[in-house]
Length: 380
View 1 (spheres, rainbow, N blue to C red):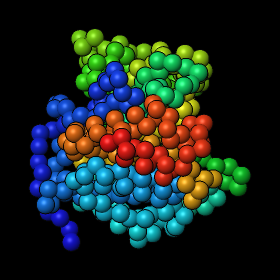
View 2: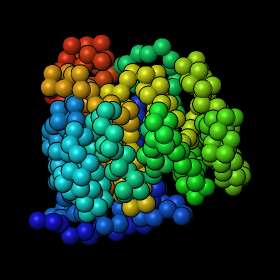
View 3: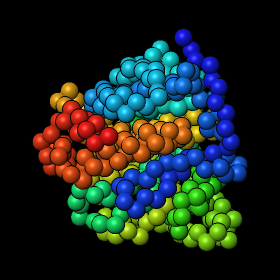
View 4: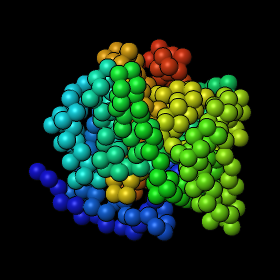
């Protein structure tokens, strides 16, 4: 039975607030101009929110089970509407269409990563299709060192904001002549303005000091030139707020990330660069198993691991680190206004990692996904 949407609140934007003692920022609902109500119509019945859950491929079922187990132990008032979509099916798969309809009803989703085959020419990425169909245009990925997880670089603390709906991911390519392929990169002023404002609003609401635009305008003078110049124009409107703006060519940015990541604060960039930079960022602080993420649109919010890896090689082995999906779930709870539950789970994950009592193989240990999950529950 479908639940009747009942909750309506003031306009919000999803942002993250600094926590000196934590390793991942909590997400809060901040009133801000020019941003539509993301929670309008969120499905709630009998005191519980209905949330779409798409476990994803690879390790998705294992990490999603960890989330459900922890949320149940923490008495989180959520009812899951689970759809076991897989990227291995055809593009017109009925279950995929049902998952999109579910998100349209519930407005909020927690999602693992869906596999995208390389060899099937007609198969569009379900991950990309979902973001484009629902216009979930802003990807927010938080990169920060974790206490209890030592890495080469210390004091890493920056946010990656990635445009989700155009660029090279537009999916417009064809073979104009045998052996000749044309692939179109789409950049529009409207969508660049939208993602740039999102980045500056995020910086403004979270006491961030600088926004860096990542581009390749020295070569792609029209496409990336439009992205860069639009970001520069938007930056002018935030000068009075004290937020600095600079830009960096993407190849230099890659070198700077691995040599001096502390120089970055908020980074905004087109789709493909965001994909690459988020993977570099994840490697700086420990890998894809610990990076949470949020995808924000005008009407819908979809939360998924920030570093989009399926983990096919460890599927079914009970070795996956579920932290990325758990912490993405924490961001979702804060989005829904369930701050107490979010804080309990966040602190439990933090204690589990800091104490080192349940280190999965990616963290240098031998613990299983189940061990990590039970440790988090014991720390609630």
